[in-house]
Image 1: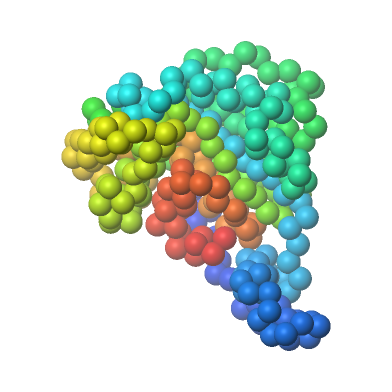
Image 2 (image 1 turned 90 degrees about the vertical axis):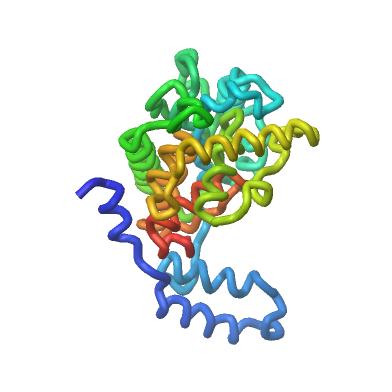
Length: 293
């Protein structure tokens, strides 16, 4: 059995006993019932995910995956593709917003190259900011142009998912109670919109936004490109890996693996933004119990 399907087979539902104990504890706290609103139900859900009545999220990590996209050649982003590599280097220097937010949250940062176009300069791991780790997991120098055919092969999609599973396992071995997902890839809202439209079964207009700040004409063009990509590739909503291969991205596939790996190890996942949400759609289609992670 492959790592992907072995992982899926080991994802379990919420732990009912832990949730019952967490709910009972709520009734013993000095506060009016329900006064903390959704925080109360979230604490019970966390107990169910972690299978312990008193959930713990003290050991935290932000896993940020980067890759480029052939669809960028169509002009669906305001920024050149080179910005992907530039931003990865900024993460590694500690100069990006995620560095500041992770520091404030007391979270480690993992930055992984899953498919950045070109070669990154050799990374001096000893010079990385405290709490930052870099992983070279490059599977290709970006995807193909999904407006002309499949973004990648089925084998590449599975390999990227499994590398994400492995990455999560490595972080878990260091101690991990909660993980947040991050990504970097110029033009990656376009494949994400493709995935969302197919797996959610909704019109392209509903799941396609301005990305980096497109004006009305540019947004209309982006939606046209997405419709063309879907018409050319004909992704099947019943084949989540096939959807990912035809209209996805390497970093999105990697995030699918991170989410599945976290669900397998009962680690709650905090999704950051639309691209991570698209990855979650694929993960949940592959393993419905992962929806509660």
